[in-house]
Image 1 (cartoon, helix red, strand yellow):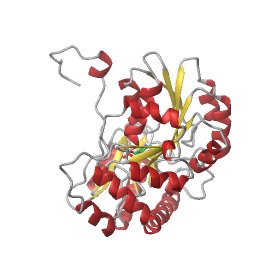
Image 2 (tube, rainbow, N blue to C red):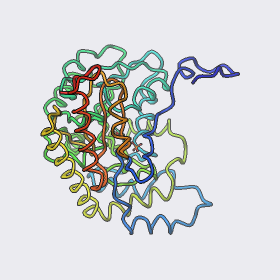
Image 3 (tube, rainbow, N blue to C red):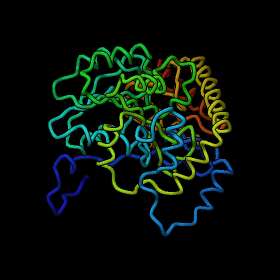
Image 4 (tube, rainbow, N blue to C red):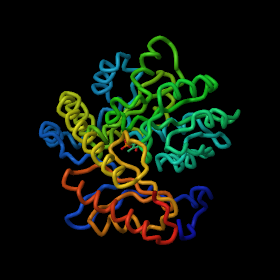
Length: 371
Ligand SMILES: *Cc1c(COP(=O)(O)O)cnc(C)c1O
């Protein structure tokens, strides 16, 4: 915030920048900055949303039908499911429920850009543990950073923006090293794209919870990415009913809209069709990754619907190269770019832009060390 507010704001809020959304592309270009699903909604989903006519009525605040459906899907009771307006809302609720001023929320960094702000809003303190050189969580360093004030540990797998998964064995070791009363949020926003990765599997967490273990872990899922419902804002958590009740108590009442709940239900009816699209995106991603490696990029295999281009010391030049080719990407100044896997028609331009960045930096422009 740049201007002095005429009222007394909390100083940490006055200093906090609002969440920065991915930029829009130039006319005729492609938006590869927000990890959105490039496929249009399934006709059945669009039709159900269009047919939602009771817009004068409040939605079902308990999301009963959707929770029942998700509970059956995960083999748990509906009390073990909590639905919110996207997993960013879930994160905010759980952090607020567990972390008070003076408490610590621990996560790997770099990771999802929303985490730091949510922690600050809760009045808590972020403790960031640097990623390992492959962009993965350094779980042993994370375990070592736990203090008596740690209330929440966030695990993001696959990690946004680096694309690395947290391997199952690493996750197990981390959770085993934590005090059992520390809340672990497993953010699986991109899990559907990570088949075969060997990454931690939230379904296995839920299975353990059915046996009374891992009760301090909550699994976060979203309909925004693989399911293509980003506009509607809907996601859910699976976990211990008493932990979920804490989150629910912090929630803004009735913030999950009826069209969102209906769209999620119809999407679950058409899971196979949606997963075919996920597979197409994952194949596209793998082809892009192989081509990037052939260009000389040293990038670990990505497991989300995006690729990470590490460009240490870049001062914005690389993002401009993409922008000139009509591709809006997410820039992390000095660190690199995150490029979403979008429409097939965007792939050639993506690879040409990446090659151009390699060429520019090989010509020895300032700070060049792309390879
Ligand atoms: C996109 C994303 C989310 C999802 O946010 P929604 O609020 O569900 O749209 C959550 N976590 C990570 C790491 C993400 O990249």
